[in-house]
Image (cartoon, rainbow over all chains, first blue to last red; front, side):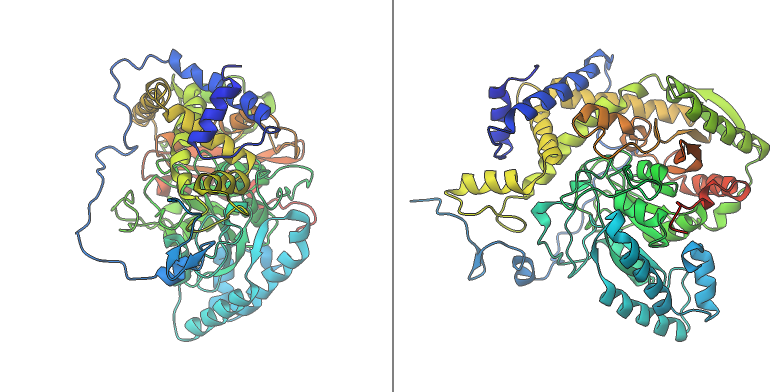
Length: 96
Length: 484
């Protein structure tokens, strides 16, 4: 295995994913095989090639005018939220 | 029967007042009612909305409007946000999500009067090549219901192949339009990156994702792409370039067309698959095309490149699902960290979690240079090699998939084997190129696809080359048994 259980636990924590103890061996094995598979990239001689930023030559990130284009839709958007009170998203207490 | 007609033929019937859009819509809704239980191709049906839209299309036509898709039914992949209609992306995470706005693709097809019948099943968040990763269960291939339809646009492909709709929308990040099109015997096009707006299309890997069409012929796909393509200020990577008349381009002559045969596509290709490609090449030569051998030495690295870049982007894009603003929330979270971790752990399926973790790993401190940066360099090399090839040839031709549709469950336990299904399709995504798959024959009574890849913004040329092939062959007319 190229990844240990501890490493996968750390990755899961960084990704904010709860993984059950029962699922963990499956992820250790499959993530190890993926990491081994992509390690093939190290064989490529990339010399001085710059990492790709955009597939189309000459495309630049477009900027728009700094103007208000959005109107207030918070009630519509918050209709999808699991818990809302007085227009605010409710989460468990963060500060005691 | 109505469901075997092309979009052009249906439009002629509508224009001649031989049928109404309401009648046409009822016909397809009845087919969905009859066949969806055995195929699981749709996750949401919007029958009432469809009949209202159809009635409106009939009024518009009576008032003198005439657009090629006015009153023609379709199915949207459930990755496109549809205002007021559940948009699940095949995930438990969004099982209760009612989109508050329309994706640009949805808006444009609505504007020209197309009638949405429902939303198509898909691999969760478009991650998969078999449609087995859906929270709503696998889609069955209408050619053999023990086989997968491919993925991730598996529901769109199965529904179009089984004539439950004249066409469907799809998205293609590593082959998710072309591979299911091939495995279900239909025509699918992934346009150039930036050709069709990504606004309102739930993001998987933003530098690779592109919306496209699944239809039963190149001529039908041309009509649909015409309505979808074009600049959208709401998508920062949308390209502001004129859209050619794709229908006018269908009859471009093929005399002198140079078709490149990628050496890397044919190494190790199964003999029966090679034979189908050779048959197709004979057709193209008889139409006046010439073939040229070309090589892209780094192309074999496209799958590992993709499985670094795509998970990296997915781990970032899917961080928005936090159990706070929308989507699934776990029961009784004990604190905020528990809320995040369990909402995501319970809301996402196994493959999505695997890709988020792969992406988190390759972007983490100490590994970023070795994996992510290295992959983006190899991606540049592959893109440069494609560009050099298109200096010598007009189009590249090869297989879409290594094999026909495989059995449901056959590859589900081995992610790397599953990933290799996309070996011929991923290159076009890495380089942002347009690609099309169309039927070219059968292996073991299952359809196989032929792929055409062209330079950026060559959709017109690709659709034309596919249409000319379909004028002299009938592979695209074959219908799975029981769905005639």
